[in-house]
Image (cartoon, rainbow, N blue to C red; front, side):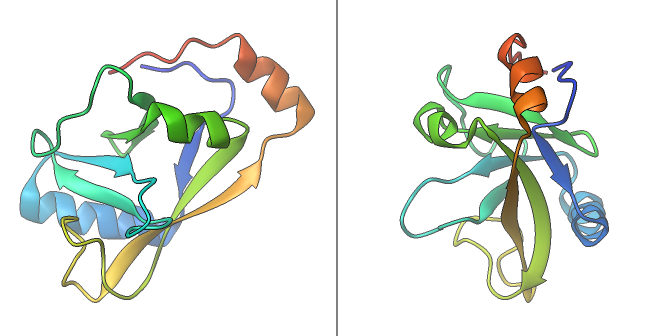
Length: 128
């Protein structure tokens, strides 16, 4: 697990509630933050084991026990940013478990402060 002094990924109350609903239906889940053109800023939610992360993918933390990953190249752009997972009305990504629910996860962000960036530089990201 990561021991970041400030979490790299957090969620709004509505995202926690929606995640709990999906966990009840599908069991253990995982997120992958897509960098593809089709999914934009939508984190994709899968049942654990249904999406194969590579050794290069970066583990950012977990939300309610749900691991959250991002591609290595994408992380290079986002490493100075805290991801804030929210829920909005709409259709989820084609392969994401939120698709068809009338809601979808959305990634918002905020830049880490200089102090937070300095603290995070020394942290080695490890997988759960």
